Amino acid sequence: MHKKNINGLTLKELEGFLTDLQQESFHARQIFSWIYKKGVGDFGSMSDLPLGLRRLLRENFYIFDLKFIKLLRSKDGTEKLLFELHDGNFTEAVTIPTEKRITGCISTQAGCKFSCRFCASGLLGFKRNLTCAEMIEEVLYLKNNNPDRKITHLVFMGMGEPLDNYDNMLGAVRIINSSEGLKIGARRITISTCGIIPGIRRLAEEGLQIELSISLHAADDKIRSRIMPINKTYPLEDLLNACGEYIKKTNRQITFEYVLIKDINSDLQNAKKLSIILKPLNCKVNLIPVNVVKEQNIEPPNKSEILAFKDHLVKSGVNVTLRRPRGQDIEAACGQLRLRYEKK
Picture (spheres, rainbow, N blue to C red):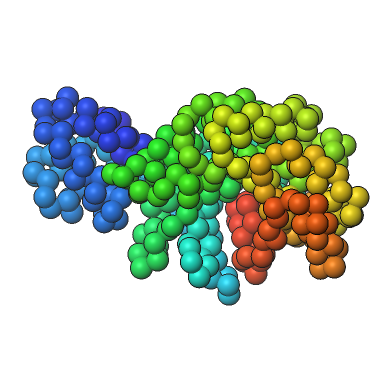
């Protein structure tokens, strides 16, 4: 009998499974509580379930399938975990603590097909989509790895493009958000995209109060196409129009991520262009000095150039934050640990 990962099931689906096996459907809530609230990884430990049901669960399901490979801890508290999937592929997840929150960052794909120049995720190519259950497992590993430190926020910003794996990603969001599941509020869940316009429009119809983050990284098509090939399919004007539609439909602010790369997009002229194209939108900009990726021959600008870029946006009325680099001593950027491990 082929077993399934139980983490891919919604509460309603699990209730239906129990009913089909002539078991009481209320046990589904107990099972969810054991997995998502208490962090239990085997059915035998679910002591308030009938022995017969525990046997049926073991025969039909498993809870954990990811194989933990490596943990790196940064001096700033950031932790990166590397996992091996059942088919020998690898994926990553990260926890980023601050004084007021602990953010979990999870992957949606093994590898990436979009080849953004500043990102290590796609350097070894795209392997496959992660399942909904595998994404949930990533969160459970982060949660169980730090039982005294609650994951307060979750971002789909790890390896891969979330909107390229839409159905599995959204299934994971709904379980993570549900009161019976991990109970992380929708406004504390962020989905990041390189600009998949059909996915943005589809997401606008879901009725979820999630945060949407757009990897922008340039203020004109020439530069954006140079560092983000996806721009050739979904050019900047079309992307900004889709973002405007999303804001109007959801009444939610969008965050534009802007990685500052020396000699490419970080001078004052680019700051001026960026302030002009974003002025009509209800948005904020998150400036991020790029992580050094030796394979891509890129590096961040100096501090004075970064501050000048930020100051121009502020003076132009753009809501802007400057992200403090995290986990640089453990190469915590997307795909870097997988890249080092697989290249051995």
